[in-house]
Image (cartoon, rainbow, N blue to C red; front, side, top):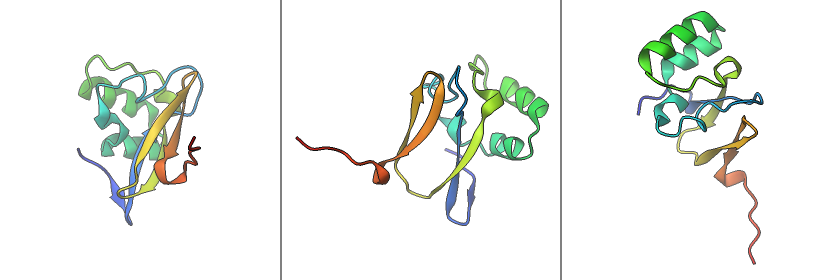
Length: 102
């Protein structure tokens, strides 16, 4: 899977706004978490170009959350998951989770 890496950090796309998730509402398309072109367009705040790119590259993709896309930078090799609450996505890093053991 193609990823954008800078200084040992990987760009991860998620949508923190309420209403619709980005990757959580498109579970069959995991590459949208990391697509370097999307990352670049989000960083440059080029919404029109972003919509065109996503429409052409990912046919039949649900585009909820597109307007709220945010880039998080995680250390390479980090284990994480995207959590969705009412369409608002957040990143949970495995190393930072405190599990309770019975």
